[in-house]
Image (cartoon, rainbow, N blue to C red; front, side):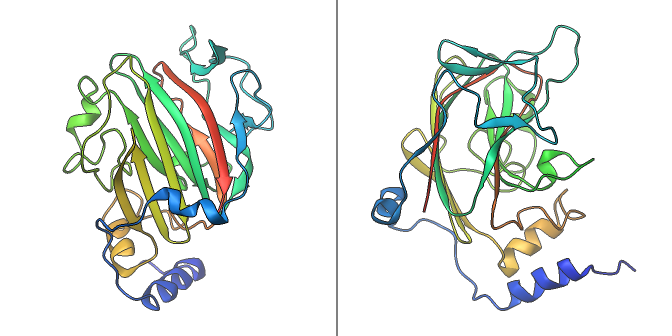
Length: 244
């Protein structure tokens, strides 16, 4: 019998104390947050990497991640070694994140949020991931359940609707809004996903996922932003965030 940790029990008590809510479409819009948002913070302006460092490293990777034409680009290392995931130096609680991404043919990456940095643990065991993918050509697009590994999805958990990702070689515009337990994914001007964390349904979904042995996954109310090195060419630009 698996003994629940105090942390897991605390999460369960919190979940059971919350009313059940649907996470489907509603009439809210991310712009509604404008009246109570702080000024935008530029995380990447096309020239400076001062806001970033390696995951589980005090320094920015010296190979792999480069600046090209005002974009932050991952180019796989010639020696086959991973450059490594990167993360924001600052952590954020409630926020609106805005950026653009582009993948080459067959490309795969991810945008993480609410990361808990853990030695000897991969970034995806804590951070929620908005998938970045060439849906037409990468095999992960056809795995998972109902498209929950396709671009814009909450990776391996919740698919998006409608499908608004642009093909490889084109820039995609992203907004991620995290406001308490509620999270929205926006892709190319359309809200494609809205979900609520820490409900009975949320914990049931995690219990039946690959994240079931990681109580830290999705549990953080504050954490870092991350970009994934998945071994494929990916470009990011115009990365900015504001606290809500």
